[in-house]
Image 1: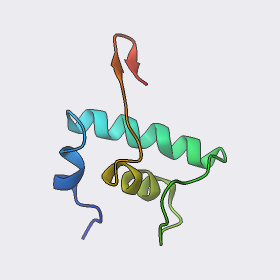
Image 2: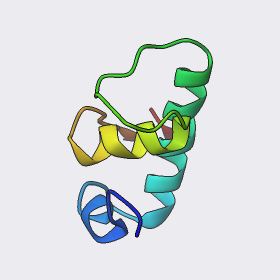
Image 3: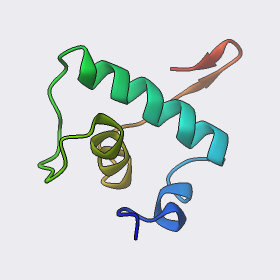
Image 4: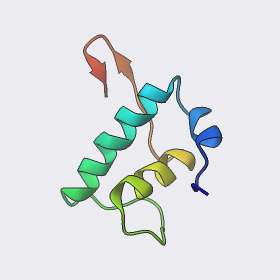
Length: 68
């Protein structure tokens, strides 16, 4: 089972597409050396990014040119 669940994550954003883009951008930041804002058992960057989204540590702003 995926933890955090997709049902939980979708409530944090406006669409599944936004969730994917947000998680991918944050995972790239973590790969580039940005510190994680949650304690995670996983060493996978995407899982850490999803946990941060689930715990409201990551926010986003929708603009005309994309997501910030």
